[in-house]
Length: 572
Image: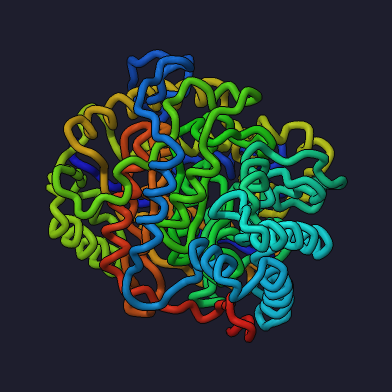
């Protein structure tokens, strides 16, 4: 079925007009009319009319039930060797400081985790005191950071680091519990008390010796893709602080791009790792559904939620995946998967791989984005990959958007049912409006969307049959500007939202792994990301493709960037 794009038409609203719209949407009588207009614009009415015969799935579509997975295992020695090979290859241009760089500096005695911790604290303060402030990090405990750095320094001096991540700075999205820090989920009313226990993903980072530098900013409750947060201030895009970093993992992406850490933990319900990674010029990996435990992450959108790494380079993202992925007895969705593997991720070239593109969909992006991504496709061909054109059968790709919208906002509204009763007026205006629209959806809408979701999963499985991945732009545009009228209220801009997240939700609905890799820059110097969606549990294949894309891109320095392994600290 050929891709038939439908234009989203809705006015942008911010400031006082947005606050009024939110109140009207919450009204018993006025809400129906406003909700109908916006839901129609978002494609929900068209979805309601779309026939479907599939049954409601009983487990996440695209994923076998627990215990139904099979796959190869990779030993620790093989994983270490792969990580070493990935870290040894660097692309041209600006050199971000990587996890491997930190480990080498500690091993050679050129620097210590204690010195890095002080530089992180200084750089965070400096960049937040600049005009405008970066606001990548929301909360930072100097005492906690210094204690961890002191212990990591002692381990390196004794020649017994815990892992190649020992003493390496890592930021954690404020959607995920980190012991001693409140988890605000981007709100002003959650996180009244510090978390008493680390989330499973944070436990793994801490066990590896990571230097947890603080909680990173995010779009409120993850319900947006720009990173605008009126409560804490928006994180800024290090390539242009007048532009959005993307969301909802805005802080993790901005922190990595700004050099505050080479690795961050993000969350992705509809592109929230890959979108900010693309707009900020870093690598974002959304693993297969359930690959990383969700225990300790805020319950927001259960059936589409993923945790995963954002890295300065492919090697950093691979290291993050290796540390984070694996079963957790307290998260049933993490059980029954094959053991995580990086086997083949560092292979030279792409001989033997086949990659698919859907032509009309691939080209449904801004001209500059499409141009950069076409050049990336040429590099993949030159590396030996066969690129084939395909059309999905039995699926209208444009229905992915409303199916995902109904799914994620319904689950978020349910997750925040009690909070909405008590704190409705404390949400930002854009969140209030979106939750009000979600509450106008019906049980019929949700079930109907899940039946379409089952059809989408079957069609994508057929689309991927005989190929190793599906290639698209990561976003339909580069980073839009941060507008002054939205700083205190947020904004409702369905057209821009759709452009930003056009290619992302497919991987959330299907649970398939997907990666965004820096592919180049638009004429204004803003980063462009390329996305590759793969088969279940084949993150290693995505990383292999990502490595080739990365090697052919001359990386550019962000305007705002800190050098933690150099005594002069931050610039920008």
